[in-house]
Structure formats: C-alpha cells, structure tokens
Length: 98
Image (tube, rainbow, N blue to C red; front, side, top):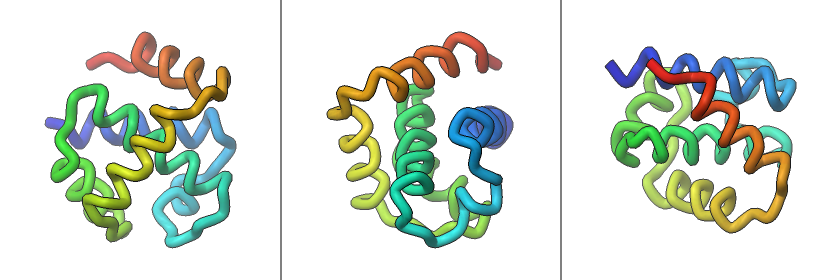
C-alpha cells in the first residue's frame, strides 16, 4: 500500500531535483543527491510513514540506510529555511494524494 505512494514521491522528487531514480538510490553523499534523499524521507514521514517503513522501502530499491540516517535527513530538511524545499514539500502534498 505504501509502495505506490512511495514510488509517486520518488518520481516527484527526482523530477523536481533533476536527479535520475538510480542516482537517488546510489550511495552518494553529494549534497544534491543527499538533499533529494532527505526530501524524500521528509515527505514520506509527513504522509505519515514510519521510519521503519521508509527504511524498508529504500531497501526494496537497493539502498541500505539506518534509522539514524533517516532521522538526520528529516531533521536537516525540517530545520531548513530554504523556501524552494518548502515549496516542493507543499506542492507534493497537494499534487500527490492517493
């Protein structure tokens, strides 16, 4: 059930950040890639999905992560003052409802 919305969020985040899906799920700490991943975590958490569900969904895509990494990413986005990030979050919650 959560897989469908997760995939929708992945596609949206990739299109908004100009990142390919395979890049999002590759171990890469480049700020552009990690910010996109953190954005995905945050949007999923707001759905609401649990951190455990996010970890499982990421793992299903071949990306192994930990609870602390997901929580760090969510905190990083939540504490951001970047208006563009806030707009993406608002837009996706309005556009991507299942």
